[in-house]
Image 1 (cartoon, rainbow, N blue to C red):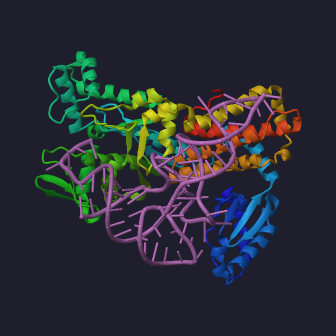
Image 2 (tube, rainbow, N blue to C red):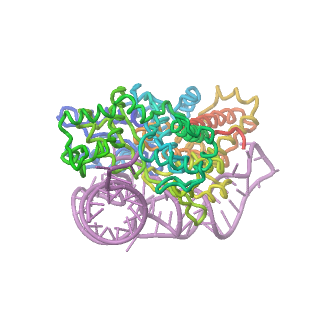
Image 3 (cartoon, rainbow, N blue to C red):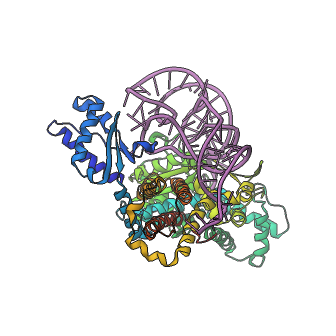
Length: 533
RNA sequence: GCGCCCGUAGCUCAGUUGGAUAGAGCAACAGAUUUCUAAUCUGUAGGCCAUAGGUUCAAGUCCUAUCGGGCGCGCCA
C-alpha cells in the first residue's frame, strides 16, 4: 500500500517540477502516529519546497492540487495539507473493498514476491554438540526461523542451516568427561560436569570402546538438540558438519589459498592470517603450533563452501558473544576474492533466565542449567516462541519463567490467540449466515472501531515486507498485538450477529478478514491459532 | 584500555530507515457482561526518553563526550 501511494505521490510531484530540471527527493509515506491526521502522510513538501523555491505550506497546497487530479482522488476522501505534510484519508469504500481482497487471497494475503525467488542461506543456532540447547540457543532458533519464514513470505528461496562444530578441543573434553563418568571418576580439569554428562555415560555404556564412540556420542547429543528444535517447530534443511570440511580437505585448501595469496605469516611456530593490515584488530592463527587448524580456519572453509553453493545472500544469526568474530570472517572472505557484503551477520543480544528475582545461571561445565527443552515443556511452544520473538534482537532479554507461567492467563500470546478463537466462535454461532458474506453490504461498516480494524488489516503486506527487510520479526508480534486489540475493541463496540442480515453479512466479512490476518501472522511465527480456548 | 549492544512510566518493553501531541502490557485505582467466550473492553494515574553539548525546518531516533549495565578482546568453539 505504501509503495502504491508513493507511486501516486511521485506522479503528482512530477507534475509540480515539470520542466524545472529538479531531481525528486526520495518519497516517504508513513502512517501518522496521530491518526486524526489521516491514514497516511508524506513529508514531501518540506523536502520539495527549497527545490522549487516556494514556501513549505504553499508547496503542500500545490501538491494537494496535483494529487486531486490523479488517482488519489479515487481512493481518498481527504487530501489535506497541514503544515509541511500532506495527509491522506482513505475512503470507506476503498477500505471495505479491500476486505474482499483479503478474503480472496486468504492464506496468501500478506505475501509478496519482492525477493524475486533469490536464494538465501540462513545459518542459525549452530550450537556445539557438547550438551543440550539452552534458552539462548532458543532465541536464535526462533529468531532465525522467523527471519527465514519472513523472507520466504516475501519471495525469497530460503535454506535453513545448522552448522555443527563437531571438531576440536571442546569435543575432546566432552569425550573425556563422558568416559571419566563411565569409570566413576571425576571429570577432568576444564571438562563438562553437567548432569547430562552422567546421563550420556549411562546411555552409551554399551558403546564404550566402540571405534566410532565419538561419532555416536555426538550424534546422540545432536539428536537431543534436534528433538527440542522439533518441539519448537524449527526445521532445518541441513545440518552441516564441520568434520565434513576436514574430511574433504577443505580447511587445508582454504589455508593454502590464503598462503598463496600472500595473506599469511609464520610467527611463534604457528601460521597466522595477516588480518590486521586488512582492518581486523589483530592477526589470527590459522594453524596452531601443534599443526592443528583452528576453528577460524574451518569457518573460512565453511563460508567458502557457502559462497560456492551460489546463494544470492548469506545470513548468519549469531549471539553477541561472537560479535568480535565478524570482522575477521569478512576480512578473510574479502582476501579470498569474495564480496563480504553478500554475507550479513546478525548479532543478537543474550538471554538471561530468571525464576522470579533469582537468576538461573547457565553453564554447561558446572551443569547448573535449565535446558531449552525444560523451558518448552514448562511453558509450552506457543508462549516460548512468542516471548523469544517479542523483544528486539538488540535488547538483552530477561526471561522470567515464573512470570511466564504465573501470568499464563493474561499472557500476550493468549491475548492474540483469544482474538482468533473469538472470531471462530462467532462463525460457529453464525452458522448459516456464513454464505452471506460473499454478497456483504460492506458500505455499512462505518463505526470507528470497524474503520480502525479495516485500516490495520490493510497493513499486513507492508508490515511483513518491512519486518523481512529489517530482519526484525518482533515487529510482527507488535502488529499482531495491535490488531488483536483493535479486534477486541470492535467486538465490544459492535455486535456481529444481529437480526439485520445486511449488517451481519458485512461484519462477518470484516471479522473473517481479521481472522485471516491473525491466522497468517500466527502461522508465520509458528504459534498456534486455536479455534477455541 | 579497545570494540559492539543497551539505557524510554514503579516493572518488562515498543517507538515506522529523523517527522506532527512519546505508546502498549504488567502492577495501582475507578468502571463495563440479561447479547457472538470477561483469557475481553472503557477510563484515571504514571515521563528532564541516563547526562551534557552538537547537526537539522524537525532528534527518543544521527554525531561527540561523560556516567551506568551486558558481551567480547585465546594457538577455545
